[in-house]
Amino acid sequence: MEIKRDVYLNRLIRREKNGLIKIVTGVRRCGKSYLLFNLFHNYLLDKGVKEDHIVEIALDDRSNKELRDPDVMLKYVKDRIVDNDVYYVILDEVQLLAEFEDVLNSFLHIRNADVYVTGSNSKFLSSDLITEFRGRGDEIRIFPLSFREYCSVYDGGADEAWDDYFTYGGLPLILSRETAEEKVEYLVSLFQKVYLSDIVDRHKVRNREELDELVDILASAVGSLTNPQKLANTFKTVKNKTVSDKTLKKYMDYLTDAFLVSKAVRYDIKGRKYIGSPAKFYFEDVGLRNARLNFRQMEENHIMENIVYNELRIRGYRVDVGLVEQFGKNSENKTAKKRLEVDFVATRGSEKYYIQSAFAITTPEKRAQEERPLNAIGDSFKKIVVVRDNIKARRNDMGIVTIGVRNFLLDENSLNL
Image 1 (cartoon, rainbow, N blue to C red):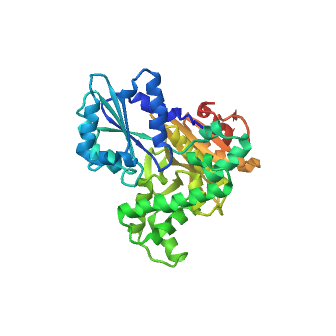
Image 2: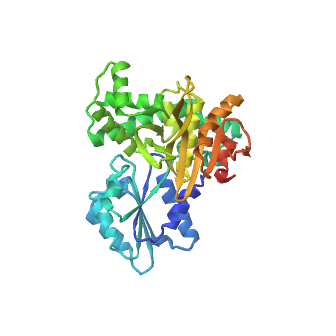
Image 3: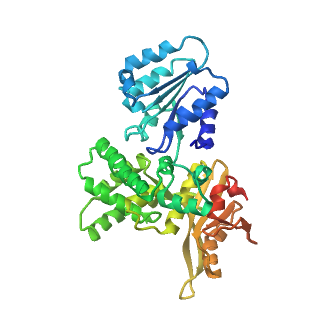
């Protein structure tokens, strides 16, 4: 089964021979190795690159153990470069290479070497490596499968695909697990034995239980505004534990640094400024989120919101939580200022979209509630309401587009319908 991941393949292609180290990052098991060793490899062959000009090394392969020595690796790569044509050097699990930062910097001095690397432990899955290169590395971020990618290889109809996707998420290997039991076991084990263990090992977390409980709280309240102080209060009132807000902030940074969760900060739309704390947190993969809670809290509205957020990021947008102020009458008939929330403000260069994830709009009052923040913005950028119902895009008199979530996810041009 070949899953086409053209979004990321095209991003690699656009960065070919740009003089930088291409660093493919993303949460473990999201398909980084497959992107480089299969999709990108085949692209190079199709465009006429000779097989011996593609130097591929999987450092987790026992037969390549000696290449984990930095000097041996440098000699091996240099010995393979025997002419002036471009050589594509592709290293997988590069964190297993000793002093890999120095080795990669050395590769930059080989004029006809175009270098691509990936890795999958917590040391590599962080901002540290990008910082280390300080402009000499070019990051290509890869996410778990989008719903469009998932459906492209799913054996079944769209309704069944949606049910599976919002339950088990988009990690590629989920598609090879045939039964619900196998999928659950895979996700639960992956979260506990791989992701969290990496964080504990790297940061020498002394109290694993605190980290576990924090993850549970974030998973239970996905998409809710929170901050370390609020979480500290939750630990005190619900868990009957005292954990400092500084400790919780460190844990939250570890989780975002490892790409397990993502932070969406608040943005004052009319004031054009960031507000800061509190913020919202979404999971990189909803299947991992659900597995963390043993598939108990399966509120489709919150999961759908998480999926819409992830989709916008997959498409290359920066995503914030929008706030817009509106003046109206309070219960005493006095003028009062209200803050209305826009679920997502998605920006990419000069592009901007305001998006509400509304799940179900069953009454005119509910529609008015969802559209009120969008109507209060007052600028000309596109405004969209995404709902659970399977409907095609339709525009009201105020220019607000309503679209069903499946159509929104499956149509790569859905933001411009």
